[in-house]
Length: 273
Image (tube, rainbow, N blue to C red):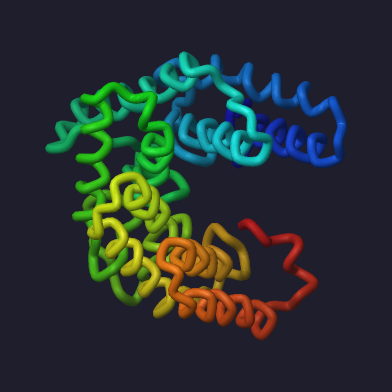
């Protein structure tokens, strides 16, 4: 999976470029060029049989990598034409899948046959990346993205989101993870609020934080994906959005729980997982 940002070559090239640049090495251009060249890998509509659009291995992840590089290096890694091509592939892929499955909405995606909604493999992170590059979308496609954001908002069940489309949340087995659930979905609505300032997106993001506060002390370790750190980051996000110091307190309490409940010698091994 050469073009994967989190699970493949694109992520390695992106990190190498940032490390070399931080060390003042001119060699940072080499991994940067290798990252850029991968756009051709993920441009074909179905370049991965498992699903070509999600965050870990798909186009959304590749766009996320380009965004991280721009933020850290001050360089637009991809040309406007390359960005437009990748965004158009994501949109067309979502349209085709929605038509094929006769969905009553315009954009939907699957990963290994499952219609995920959450940040790891699902609709929320795909839409977040499309919003991040919304200036490269034609007006009609931009409207479809916003309609999909509102559709996802309406899938909320008691301040949380099911892992996949159409599922009902079982309270005894509720997932409140970055990968599946409110802590990951929050970032999409934060991005939506930053773009158009509509209060409903901020309100939804705040409800995500309340769920993370109530049920975010997870038992699967300290990591981001399905651990306590994934919950704690939501409070840092909400502090940046609102300036309310209670979110700093909540983030601190989550971090304190790591030291209180996790054996420190395993932290380096599972900090992301």
